[in-house]
Image (cartoon, rainbow, N blue to C red):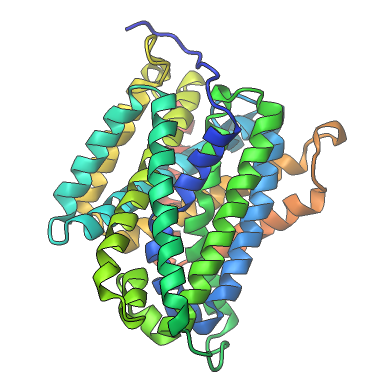
Amino acid sequence: MSAVTQLTRRLGTVDAIAIGLGSMLGAGVFAVFAPAAASAGGAVLFALVIAGFVAYCNATASAQLAAAYPASGGTYLFGREILGPWWGFLAGWGFVIGKTASCAAMALTFAAYAAPGWERPIAAAAVVVLTVVNCFGITRTALLTKVLLSVVLVVLVGAVSLALPAAVPMGDWFTHGPLGVLQAAGLLFFAFAGYARIATVSEEVREPTRTIPRAILGALGGAMAVYLAVGVTLLLVLGPDRLAGSKAPVADMLTVAGQPGLTIAVRIGAAAASLGALLALITGIGRTAMAMARNRDLPPFLAAVDSRFGVPRRAEVAVGATVCVLVLVADLRGVVGFSSFGVLVYYAVANASACRQQASERRWPRWLNVAGLVGCVVLALTLPFGSVLIGAGVLAVGLLARLAIRS
C-alpha cells in the first residue's frame, strides 16, 4: 500500500447532498423526538425551529468556508487557516470525539430496531461491516447512502400519510419553560448535524466552490422539511405526554392510527436510516482524522491514503475500532449528550472562523455567523450537566496532550 496523501474528486452535487441528508435522516428522526418532548412538551416544534435556525447559521458558515478552502478536514482546516492551529485543533478534536459518539448512537439505534435484545454485538458487527465498505472507496459509500436514504424516505412518507387521519387537535402547547425548550433544541440539534459530512469530503467533490454550498443547504432544507412533517404528525397523533414516554415514536404512531401491522416497515426504515447515517459518519470522521494527522495533531500514520481506492483507510479503521469499543460499554443517552456537546463546539469554531472571512469570500451576512456562534454556546451550556462536564473534560485532555507534544 502506497502512502499517498491526496484524495480524488469523484462526487457531484447529488452525491454530496445524499451524504449529508443520509447523515441527518438517521437515528434522530426515529428516536430524538421522544426525549425532546420530555424536555419541551408540546413546544417541541418550537425547539425544532430553534435547532433548525442554529443549524442554518452553521450551514451557511460551513458552506462559505468550504468553498474558500476545498480540502478535507472541515472546520479543523478552516480554524487552522483563519484563527490559528489551536482553534483548528479544538474544532477537529471536538468533531472527532463528538462524531465518534454519534457513530455509537447510530449503531445502537440500528441494533435496537433490527435485533432487540442483541443490541451491543449487532451494533459492533454493523460498525465492522460499514467500515469495510468505506475502505473500498467514496463512490461506493455515496451509492449505498443513496439506496438507504431512498428506503428511509419511502417509510417516513408512508408513515406520515397513514397516521395523519388519526390526528386530533392539541391543547396547551406551552407546558414547559424556556430552559426545557432550549434543552430540547440541543437534543434535536443532534439530528441536524449531518451536513458537516459534506464539508469533510470537500477534497473529493467536483467543482467544490459551486457544489459544496448547494449541497449543504440542499441537505439541510430537505431534512428540515422531513423533521417538521414527522414532528407535527407525532404530536397530533400521540400527544406530547405519550410521545415523551415512547421508545419507538414512529412505530407507536402507526399503532395508534390503527396500522399496527406496518410497524415492521418502520423498523426496517429505522434500521436503514441508522446504517446510512453511520456509513456517512465514518466517512467524515476518517477524513477529519486524516487532515489532523497531516498536521501531526494526530499520529502521522493516519494521514496515509490507499493508492487503489483513494480513501484514508488507516484513519477509518481506527475510527471503526473506537466505535466498536463504545457500543460495547456505553449507553445511548450518554453518547447522544456527549456527541451534541462536541459537535456544538465544532460549529462554534466554524462560526467564529466565518466571522473573520474577508468580504470577497463572503456569501452570507456576518450577523448569521454571530447568531450561529451564540446559538452553539447557548445550546451546549443547556445540555444535561453530565454531558457538559464529560465533554469539557475530554476536550481538555486533548488540548493538554497537544500542549505536551508541542512543548
